[in-house]
Amino acid sequence: MGIMFVQIGKIVTKVSLGFLLLMDIHCFTFLTRSTIPIAPLGDRSTFVLVSLPSANLPTFKTYTKQKINSVYEENNFSFVLLPRAVWEKMDRSLFLASEVTTPLGFKFFAENYQTQLKKSTFEVSDVFSGYKDQILNERYLTQISLTHSEFAEKQIIGTTQSKNPIFALRLTRKNISDNGKVNVLLHCSIHANEVITTEHCYDAIYTLITNKKLKERYLDQLIVWIIPIANPDGSDAFWNVSHLQGRKNGSVNNLKGVDLNRNFPIHWGKTGGEYSSNKIDSPYFQGPSEGSELETRALISLAEKERFVASISYHAFANALLYPYSVEGFLNPSPDLAEIVGKKLSKKTRSTHPTKTFSLKKNLYPIDGVDQDFFYFRYGTLSYVLESSHFNPEYKYVPKILDSLRNVWTQMLDEIVFGEKILIRVLNEEGAPLLTKIQIKGLSYFQGEVRTNHPKTGLFYTYYVPDLGNEMVLESDGYESIIVKTKPSSKWEIQNIIMKRSTRP
Image (cartoon, rainbow, N blue to C red; front, top):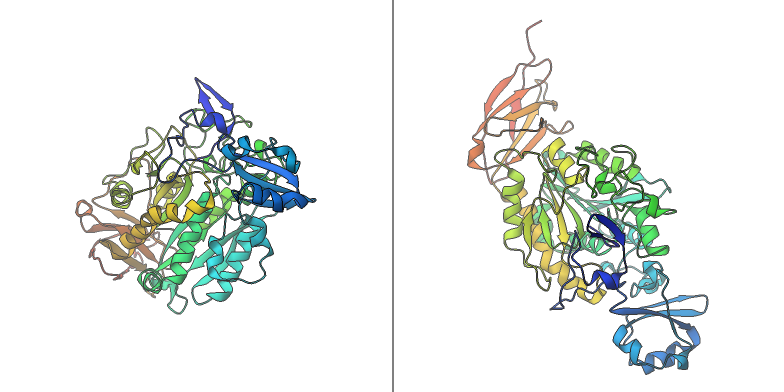
């Protein structure tokens, strides 16, 4: 879930991207080139960031036959990204050109970034003009909310230490009551150096607002929350300070920040391994206490309010779908609905990774304090991590990568809306939603999990397999406990359950 650090023996060491090409990394492996090569833009073995006076840029472009991937202008200098093979063969003295060896922010590497910033009009296709920082993210979400207001609404779910807002887009058909809908979450760039993940979130946004068939298919029954940049402070550091930063939070001193996906209150700090570290200099630093970070709290607060039935957190680039629990020693519920659905989501997925096939896994290494485990434990969310197939490649490859992995989130929405399910609403005698503890008789828990319905709507959703049976035990303080027989269905049919007040003193 990031780069910059590798393990040699028992030591985590910072190395150059060129050296990373020779080694297996915990979250990914650099492999041979294929249809879409594994070549991150910051990889100095493949690309060279060149600085030259802006006045020399036109002749430089002619000389290199336009083999330039990006141009960033600053203080009368142009920064261009060249294939190293081109750079090694050219006479640099003709243009006063020099290789930049200092690890600059990603804005110097991102093609079309300044062009996107300067564009004064908006078309929805602009979201595929190039990689996005927090500035472009806010701009695009604002414009989408304005131009597609019948479905889209930009919201701020929290604020960071640096006062950066955490933006989300809430997508649903607004002229249909939310009372019969369930919530789904897609969030990206919690490790903000994995900037390709933001593109996966925008792929979902673009598809859902432009594809009439999918809008009708999903947004009548679902409220889809999409957070393109869950770590905006880390994004600031990645874009403006160094492309080797951004995994952790903190825009001023990112290397001393917290790995937000080690900070959730689930078995926090108990694994004792290097991948959930108590050392502040570690890229996997778990924070001073569980849930200590504002970004973590924002996601927890949103989950508590919305009770997501399914979620995907995007990372890069192990080319896999991870399902909970990732904590070693944790026993999953039986039957394990997250694994059952995960097999369906990964079965037909064909990624563009040059050598590795897309696969379903429980974890990549021993960790704790991660979001998908927390969501599954606390709410029963069918929560996954999707590890993209590539790490920040040239943007021309991004559309094909998105296309290859789109099936995961669309299939997930299909399973929620059209798969076999139990969908009930628990009400009191006055017809108001009643917070209720719900135990499915055929479902066994081993970690002390407790399931309740949505406190605002009274809805309770569970994916259904025959081993669950059709009986539930419902308990609520001050009410008679009851056993109800449910009606599994592939249709969106809500079964209302009325709880009666207890007559016992």
